[in-house]
Amino acid sequence: MPFIDERTLPEVLMRPGIHGKFLAHKDLGAQGASLLMNRAASGAAVPLHMHQVEETVILFEGRIWVQLGTERRTIGPHETVIIPPRMPHAWGNDGPDEARMLWVYAGPDPFGDSTYLEGRPPNLHA
Image (cartoon, rainbow, N blue to C red; front, side, top):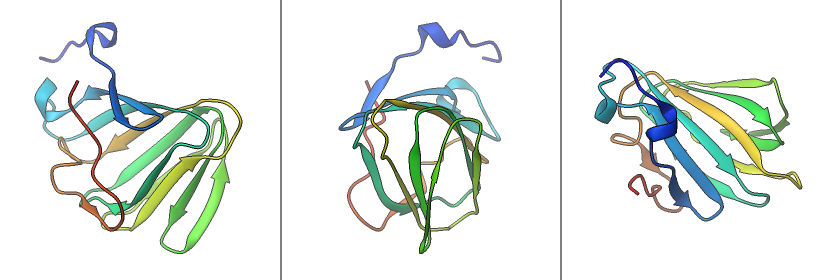
């Protein structure tokens, strides 16, 4: 399925305050990458975890903090973070407004082999 109309894809409440929509994933026919669009409400956060593949986040609106190992920074629109494979990381919205971002994973099923060091995996199904 190489042509996908994003408007027809369901948005899922992945965890409290965080909605997501896969734009590319193994379930959509992808074989080498995944794209996940997220909306995160103020105060929403994802606990410490890691993936077996490289991950990149591009922020479009709002502000989020990103923790890579022991380093933590806040990023805003037009900033990108590259997360190496197996790097423990967490993130959350520390701004007053909703944040919108795109996650790019170097594999078609990034949560299929992820490990949660804190908390639980996200809900991926509508």
